Amino acid sequence: MIERRCLATAGLLLLSAAFALSPARAERLIVSVSNHRVTVTPNYSGEELVLFGSVEKDATTPVSRTSYDLVVTVIGPRADMVTRRKERKFGIWINTDYREFLEVPTYLALFSNRPFEAIASPDVERRQQLGLNNVLLTQRVGTDYADVVPNDPFRSAFVRLRSEHGLYREETSAVTFLTPTLFRTGIPLPAEVPIGTYEVEIKLFSDGALVTRTETAFDIVKVGFEQFVATTARQDGFVYGLVTAFMALMTGWMASIVFRKD
Image 1 (cartoon, rainbow, N blue to C red):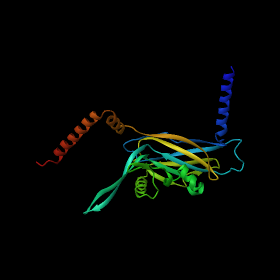
Image 2: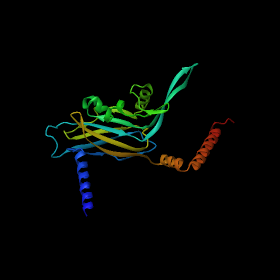
Image 3: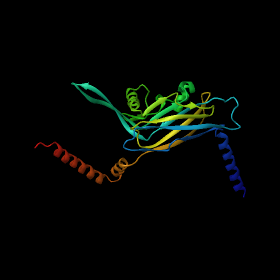
Image 4: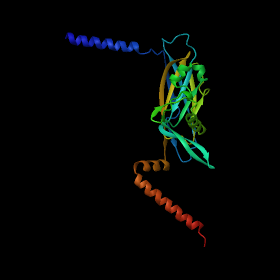
């Protein structure tokens, strides 16, 4: 009996210590997305979702805390990608070097209500990955795996190419506070947006410090004939190959009839 009481007392002490070590959050974020399931059809040309939410205070919120900063990070499905360097030799452009990026977001967007450097210190920016220059993009460098400095030529080229297609973006005036605690921002999705689940992380800052964070998500899915083709290719490659070969033969045969000379 004494042993059981000792174990129970020890368990209560550990539980109390855990609560004591966990940070007390005086605010919490309530967020939602205008559409949690985006369907991609053959005529899909892109759209914009709306993220909206509010900051809920409680009795422990400091009275002096009257203004906030918000950073929204949208991360699309991850994949391995390669950036190649081309050089002109003997009058033609050839690939001379490449860098492989491992499990990096196929879509990445960072939105805030003001510049990141005005929200937090450089150390907090790096730790919380605020801005494209601070997001970790793991690369295979020889036999090592690491991120590199933001001005690395391969990293810069990778971010630039993704940005040109609207797949990587950074906007420091995209979050609007409608009231001191109500906010909204748009999430633009280009026509070539990747299919999959998108994670949305919302971070609340005050006086340069992270106050709280929350997460939500939405899915982008194909429907119609495109979905049928993608599902068949993934689940039954042999049938997909036969149908593709048959369609190629039929296209060639019809072209020979249309363009043949009598």
